[in-house]
Length: 119
Image (tube, rainbow, N blue to C red; front, side, top):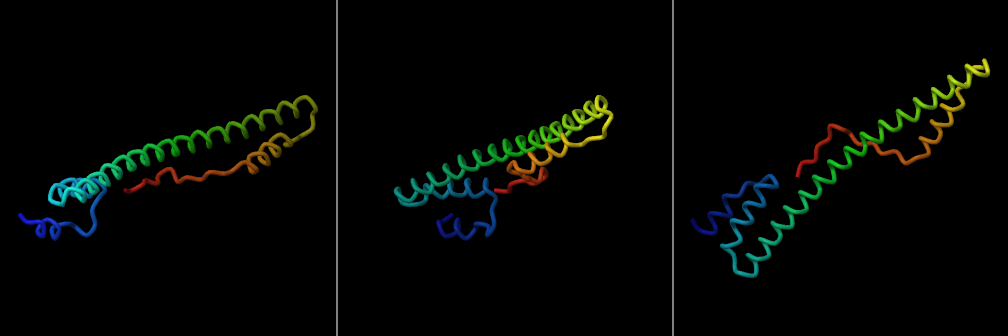
């Protein structure tokens, strides 16, 4: 199999794993300096992809925790309103309104939880 046959056999659209594998297989067929560079690029793509996937997983987990904490804040504010209403005999929602205002002022992070990163 010649170098030309190897290159023409490449798919126009490859997955990350296929691209890394093809680069590592093609590296020995290239001149030494180019082969080293292609192999190094394949390694860096591999490392970067792993780091990106880990970061996306952490981001998703933090977004889920953030949503839970926001719900907890609203729940506690409602409970405070119920306690105050019980003691003053006056309906109120000032704690809930204050909590909602504070939560709106915080930076909102919206991440579709079913969104997957395709590398």
